Amino acid sequence: MQTDSRPATPVSAVSQRPRPWLQRPLLQVETLVLICAAFLLLTGNGPFWRAALAGRDMGQASTWVFAAAVFSGFAAIYFFFASLLATRWTVKPLLTILVVTTAFASWYMERYSVYLDRTMLKNVMATDVREAGELMVWGMVPHILLFGALPAALLWWPRLKRRSLGRAVAWRLTWMVGALVIGALSLLLVFADFASLMRNHPQVRHLMTPGNAVVSMVSNLWGSGKRVNLPKIPVAADAHLGASWSGRTKPVMFVMVVGETARAQNFSLNGYARNTNPLLSKLDVINFSHATACGTSTEVSLPCMFSSFGRANYDEEKILSHESVLHVLARAGFKVLWRDNQSGCKGVCEGLAVDQLDKAGIEALCAEGQCFDEVLLSGMEGIARDATGNLFVVMHQLGSHGPAYFKRYPAAFKQFSPACENEDLRNCTVAEIVNAYDNSLLYTDFFLSKVIDFLTRSETKYDTAMLYVSDHGESLGDKGLYLHGMPYSIAPDVQKQVPFLVWLSPGFRRSFGIDEACLRSRANEAVSHDNLFYSILGALDIQTTAYRRALDIFAPCRVAPAGGAAPATTKPRSPGTSS
Image 1: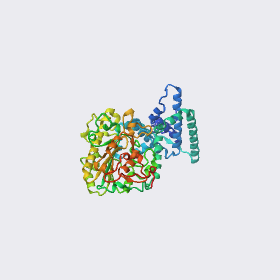
Image 2 (image 1 turned 90 degrees about the vertical axis):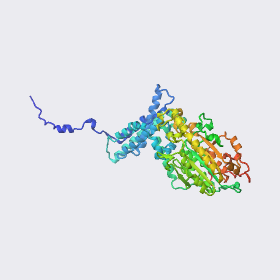
Image 3 (image 1 turned 120 degrees about the horizontal axis):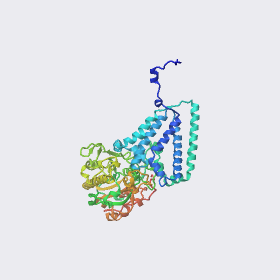
Image 4 (image 1 turned 180 degrees about the vertical axis):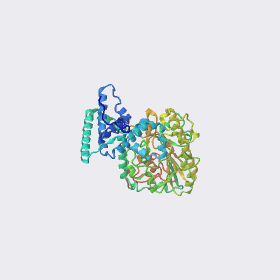
């Protein structure tokens, strides 16, 4: 009987032998990038795949061929661009950022049916801490953990192969060329269908994550980088007070209230069944019932509505680089003051006086890091009393900013119930969301009535007027859409149609020769943010060659003011022309 003469393996050595399932796999950088690209396409692009495959028969082989070809094509594209930056030292941080970004983006896109285009990302970048806090809800935690944190952690588990520089470059180029070939062949296989999708539904490209986020980020950074430290280009440099000012006995105080997220459909002044304007309906306001916004987000609409370009001649670069109508008014001699209960004026009031009141800390009006809109009236009595000359005041509301509509009004305005009191709107019924939103409009109605009351009291010193218009509308679950910011070309009307009304004191109407009855008779005509620049100049008789009478809503109703000739217009120039 033979015995085994080999030395026995020590027990300690057996216990120290690495178990196969604990060994960290050894991967090439390229393999890790490709795995990550496939993972993101499969788990972070539900809205894209639903849009791309909409109307196709899932039982047909051609549908699956199309889906596979598009998947392969975009996986190859993602791989190619990620490979430009991915090295043994950068690949894991890079992919971690992309995975976590995709997890957050896909949650919001799924939850609120939003499109992550350049404008939407710009809105995200402009969001302050309070607004961001309202969007961070507990319901997103499982999604972020499962599709963000966990896969990001797993990215750091494998080891990466080492190569010499020459071999690494050659290997990388081979992979990248292969990716281009595979991507091109895949999309060529279904070119007719893919081209039709991109041509007929170009907005679907804003659903492809994380490509949409990366492209939008680069575009925004490039655009903002070009404007750093550049002075505003003058507009209407020849602006001056017109002839009607010669016989004036009082200065003017004009208040423009910029609403936030108010949609025309829910204003009872526009025929809404609920009485959301009980106070304004009793006041002498002129309501323009067919008004359209320049954009579907504050980032777009706010600069646009104060510019001479408007939606008809929309050019973001020109709008942001040129002066606004507020600068024109200041040049004509008005004291211009911007009062803000929001996230700022987006460059509209650059170089002008600003009161930032969202953190005013007034006990009766401010709590939980925000203030109700009445804070915009705080201190106005003193400002009106102490000012000399003409005043133009902009009040930028917090208004009906979502998703926390229930935080925008005091408890006394909780008239419509049950109201949604959850920042995660998907946890509320559409009826509850509408109730909370309508309560916020009730408070706006109250606030505007307080502004008019203040202006009425100020008539002993000033000829006064108010213009109110919202920056954009809102989706409240209509057709599965929430909030705002949809690409303008496909945005529903509720995101583009806004309330627009004016109130003119008797002294203002008389001194500027504005026929109130005429203005009311034209209130059903279509107006838009494009009218604001020229209507403000027209209403205040500011003379400039940049004026365009056709866009002045007051022009058809202007008659000879008391004690003088009707304000004259000057030769019009193209919008945005500097003088």
